[in-house]
Length: 248
Image 1: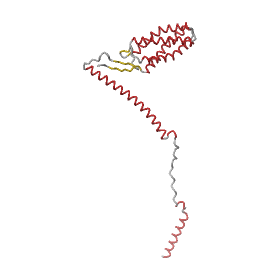
Image 2: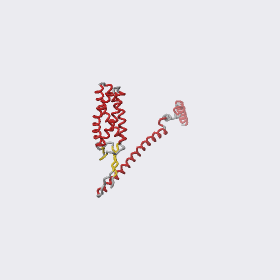
Image 3: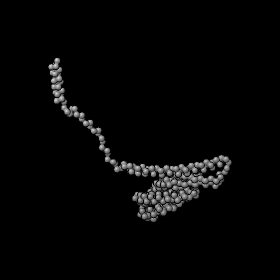
Image 4: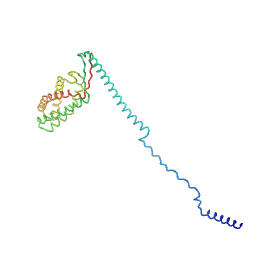
């Protein structure tokens, strides 16, 4: 019995020694876990730094605030005018007279003056080209005269429109009366005749006789054309601003 126990102990010891010799230390030693992958931070973009972004936002805010102030001012003026008209309307409905001295002021915007000047220059320039070609017989002369006329007369007519806009003479019923249109056509023609003669003589290099014929033809045709041109624009409300004061 003792011998069998001793034999079993010896066999167990041999098995333990053999198993420990075949096991690699690397299998027993725990391996370190791999470090987590970390992306390197992107280099800062100079154009998108906080200070640059804030400056850009502040500029946009400043522009929008200016727009808001302008719109608010226009809205306040419109509301004030509406309240005034509403008060006059209610007073009239109650039987009060509005009076004969109602003061209605009409003014034209800069945009309206620009469009009027450019449209008229296209119409009048076509007539000037035809008359210059007819009396000079030269395409080059006609083009030179029209070219010089286009810019000088467009600019001067715009200035004339802005000057006339300051006067209420001949304005009634929210627009220009026929007398005002005639006056504007005649005043403009006096300047335009001088301008055309100078353009034909000094730009087109033609004689005074040819210049006189062109200017004389323009004086008749364009004065009538401009009168009707003004009458058409008198019926167009675009670009008009009204300021009405009623006496009750």
